[in-house]
Amino acid sequence: MNKTTIFGLLALIIIGMLATAGLVSAYRGDYLVKGPECNEQRHDAIESAFQSKDYGAWKQLMTETGRNPRVLDMINEDNFAVFAEAHEAGKSGDYETAAALRAELGLNNGNGPRDGTGHGKTEGKQQGMQHNRQESRKGRI
Image 1 (cartoon, one colour):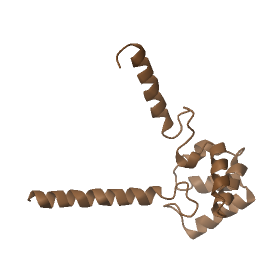
Image 2 (cartoon, rainbow, N blue to C red; image 1 turned 90 degrees about the vertical axis):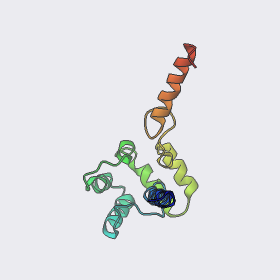
Image 3 (tube, rainbow, N blue to C red; image 1 turned 120 degrees about the vertical axis):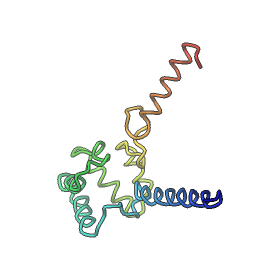
Image 4 (cartoon, rainbow, N blue to C red; image 1 turned 180 degrees about the vertical axis):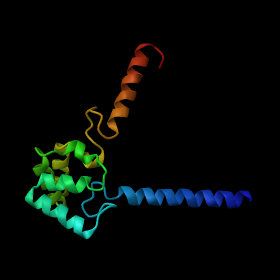
């Protein structure tokens, strides 16, 4: 194989990976994009759970595939009504209210709270910052 063929194949692989990553992550926090495991029957059942604020039914639907989605770490029976409100606001196009309610729940559009509790990407960032502060006190940085 010559260099042009190798670089061409690598470029196609990278473009494919980027396109796939965009499709997979597009639904997170976007009320208009359905998730990868969504079908009409499941969608209707989830909508029904949101409308009736039935946490038990919603949780069962979230775990029926044998997976434990991260949203279950943040949403519980006590705050499900607020989550359902955020869902309804987002569906109706009131993204500002939906974002405010999601932030109240610590969801922040899928990134988790920025308070160092370890949800989302914050934990590693906070640990890195703490490590850097400790190292700079020692005069290493």
